[in-house]
Length: 255
Image 1 (cartoon, rainbow, N blue to C red):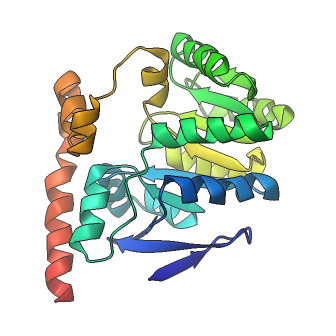
Image 2: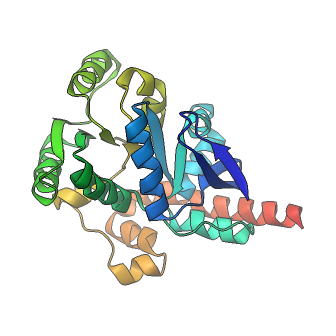
């Protein structure tokens, strides 16, 4: 079992290496416990919810790989990541989907009086997601909401707004190319204890899109459901065969 020491000193996390990316082996409960300590530390932590497409993007982009290597915690969001860990003989405890981790953190935040900030997606989507989360978790104070449509010129204002709000949790839903590198570049300025990229989670929470049925999630076919609903995702999905081929090659070289 390999381990990584979180920079903030909040403890060691068992990890498995998938194509050079260290992914946490903790289950959902263990992940929430680690992030509870992160909040208590008041030091910024980037949490990446990794899937095969993100790992392939890291292999293809120095910026994305730097984000992966500098992140304090990478959790196995995608079913393909769970499969890869099993294939390489060092499995994770379970899949830790980003949207489920968001809800688990909000639930824990209810008990501990945390605050949250939502950044990303379209204005009507993030506002509706904030409204629904506030109703579901009334004891978590949502201290800020901002859409994800801003460029470099607006960065300073967005960051200052978040700093002034002093949230315990910052959920970021921006496009795949921007999300993790943006968090990595600005996490120290942001100063938020837990900063997590959540992809399309606000779309699901707001009701704009639907998540795959539970039986498909259990069969690890959530990706197929999303592809069927959004055929425009096909070019991105072409990274999956490459990912599987690389994992198989790595496994062969290990034998």
